Structure formats: structure tokens, C-alpha cells
Length: 100
Image 1 (cartoon, rainbow, N blue to C red):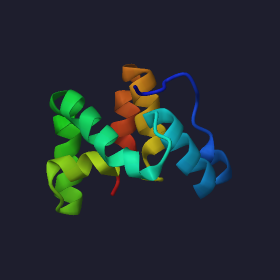
Image 2: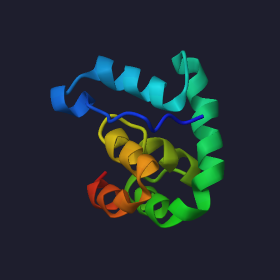
Image 3: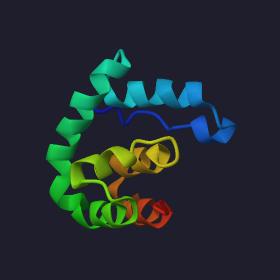
Image 4: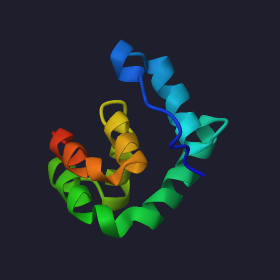
């Protein structure tokens, strides 16, 4: 289950280690090996609502739609994706930040 009970802070310190910890915590994973299936499950649940954003990422990166969802969990975008998952009203901010 995705953990929406905290605010991401890794970008405040530009910390890769903190990013990894926060990503694992948010996804409810104990290890990196658990991330892919967890993110794939979230993709299946949110694919329809995120299609316009995923298409934008696809056009900028030449990756498939399912892989474009993983971009949203990358270091540069995870904090905005997390904010969106906590509060869907932040979707415009997430869309604005996608400049792949």
C-alpha cells in the first residue's frame, strides 16, 4: 500500500540516499527488488487518469507508456508524483514539472 503519510524532503538536500529511502517507504517496499512490481501495480490502477501526462513523457523520451510511468518515480520527478498521490489537486504542478 502506498504511504501518503509523509512529505518528501530528498530534493531539499539533493540526497540520492534519502530519495531511495523515501521511494522505498512510499511504495511500502523493503528493498529495491520489490519496487518494479509495486510500481507496475500502481500503473495498472492509475493508467487511465494519467494517460495525457504519460503521452507527453512518451513523446519526449520515445519509451512505452508503461515505462513512462516509471519516469514519474525518477529522482527528478518523484517528489511531484508523491505530492500528486497524496493530493490529486497537485496534478497541474506534476504536469508542469515534466520537461524530460
